[in-house]
Amino acid sequence: MSEKLQGKVAIITGGASGIGKGMAMAFVKEGATVAIIDLNEEVGKQSVEELQQYQPDSMFIQANLAEHDKLEGLVKQVAEKYGRLDILVNNAHASKNMPFEQITQEVLDLSFDTGFYPTFYLMQAALPYLKESQGKIINFASGAGINGDVNQASYAAAKEAIRAISRVAANEFGPFGINVNIISPIANSPGIRKWAKEQPEYYEAMLSKIPLRRLGELESDIGRVAVFLASEDSDYITGQTIMVDGGATKLR
Image 1 (spheres, rainbow, N blue to C red):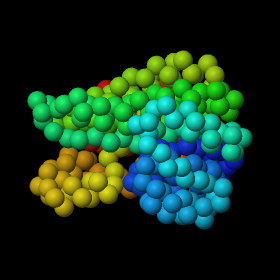
Image 2 (image 1 turned 90 degrees about the horizontal axis):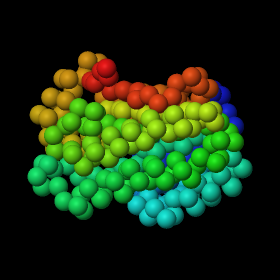
Image 3 (image 1 turned 45 degrees about the vertical axis):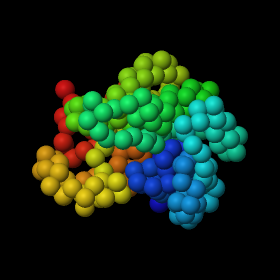
């Protein structure tokens, strides 16, 4: 175990599985105590047991992030338990993919209620604690929004809205010593693996557009970049979208 995040306290939403769990594992191995917030209680309890092998004080909170009035209380619960908050990672997001013309208000609400609004309100709730710690915020974007992927309008819209408020927050929070950055990943997540089995031709087409010809590993690729952005190594980086996608998208 290294110590890049020794003594730090982090919240990771959607931390029970996929990219969230990969980041959580990378964080605890660097010394952080992690509170994972997730809707899935069974998987969350299993995941926190793995985290506790490295950091016994890590915890799991079962919560529905679409219940926006409860988000401030989640942050307060973590900060009061540990006496501080250093890192906020807004990773959780649910959405449905479909053609633009078929998207309903319900589909838009799902994407914004689980992705954009929790990111916004958790950033607000965490701000007083992050001012004290001069902490870090890591939000999540997607190539779906940056490139305009078909059938992903509701997801893309929420992700680009998250990028927009992240840039604003970087400007507003910077004077307090708070860094706000964005990861846009392509990862070997359970969802991608399921999609690869169901639609192998589309999966292979996607893979062919990645110069490194592979998906990012949850912990060693995505998680390690998150560790960098959460540590003092990134103290002079803020307001940036970091493409952790094997070179699939090159920002200009």
